[in-house]
Every structure is written in structure tokens, then in C-alpha cells.
Length: 284
Image (cartoon, rainbow, N blue to C red):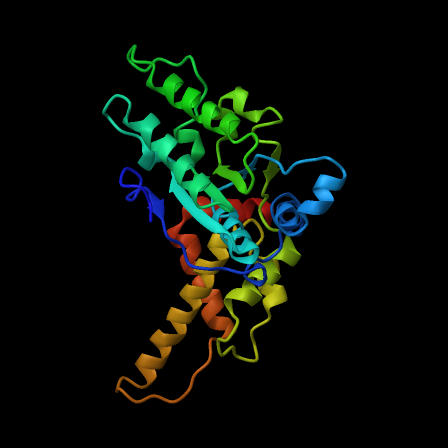
């Protein structure tokens, strides 16, 4: 069970699998090698006298799958997974944030083999030396995090993975080898990855014969994985709307999500997210 001081900070997440992650093959390979292999093949690491990396930092735009891929890694590796949202560690009380950081790492050691996943880690390890009212709270948070990372030396089965879309804010001391040994950037999906993501989110759904996921992937250039998931939901709701209009009663005939539903969903997404629309227009 989580320690009392961290119970409200640790997030339970649903299990995921590699086949639920579209694209990102190079990132999957990196995580398998750096996390799965040390757990499955420790004798081979010992044979060449090397150790598993202590930390991995994932960067990239919002919605590119940083949390999803770590969740899949934890499921496939069959290890304990501790997910912490960085901003939730912050406290107005002196010393409480440092205590929360200590408790998260203590829980990870107690439940090893385990993965600690810090989402939005820039909130707690921003570059030191900024003005925080003279209390130097930010400096103390970074110092505590560094102590915990260095304290993992000699302990097996604990890997720290962090995610941020603002790597420029992170204190440079954390980015050296021995702390975050690998820094991996998740880019927006290319056309092939978009087609794979659309196929994943359309899996098990009744699609009309006019739905061409390859063509749709081309039309969605510039969209993130989260955007594509939302697009599929919007298309499903458009199909439901059409079904209710045609048959408003409780009974209904089977219906499919059509190409027109996806077109309407894409137009709706453009209207609802003008920033995304301008991004699509820029790459069109």
C-alpha cells in the first residue's frame, strides 16, 4: 500500500500493451533494452559488468504518447508502476514537497522491481537559481530529487522515467549520465504512424466501406496521437447522432461509422481547436 504521505499523489493507471501504441518503434526499442532487458537478462548484464540505466527522460509535444508508452512498458515488464503527477507534489508547507519526493522513492524501493513515472517533471526540478521569494523552495526540491536519484546506486530493480514537454526548464544537473542516462524525444506521428494509430482506435468498431484509413491519415498530418484518438471518438458520436435521427426509438438497426462521419469529425475538430487547424493547414 502507498505510504500515507504519498497515497493521494500516486495514480493508479489502466494496463496497456505494446500493440496499443501506434508508431514510436524506436522509443519502444529503447525502453525494452533499458528496462525490460535488465529485468529479464540480469546475468548478461553481469557478464559484461554493466548496470541498467538509472533514469530515462521522455520529451515531446503534448499528446504524443509519453504516458501511454510508459504504461505499456510497465504492463509488459510485469513490474510495479508508480505514477506521480509532478505538480501534485508541490506544497505550500516548508519541507512537505521534499518529504513527498522522499516517500515516492522509498515506496519504489520497497516495491522493487518498480518503475517510478514522473509526469510533468519540470514542475519539481526546474533550473535552480530562480527567484522564489527567498525561500529557495525550488532549489531544495531539485536537491532532494538529486539525492534520491544518486541514492539509487547499488539498488536493483528501480527505474525512474520522467516526461515533460518543456525540457529547457529542467535543471541541467539532472541531465548528465548517471541520472537521466537517456533523453528520448517523441515526435508527432508520421503518416505511417498516424495510420497505425487510427487502426488501433478503430479496432472493433463497425466501419463503412467508404472509410479509407490511409487517406484519412494523410489528411490528418500534424495531429498528435491524442488528437487522432479524439477524432475517432468524434466520428463515432457523429454516427450515433445520425442513427438517432434516423431511428429515435430505443430499438435501432446496426449502423457503421462512415467516411462522412470522419469528415464531419475532422471539420468539427478544426472548429473546436483553431490552433490545431492552423497546424494542419501549415503542413497541408
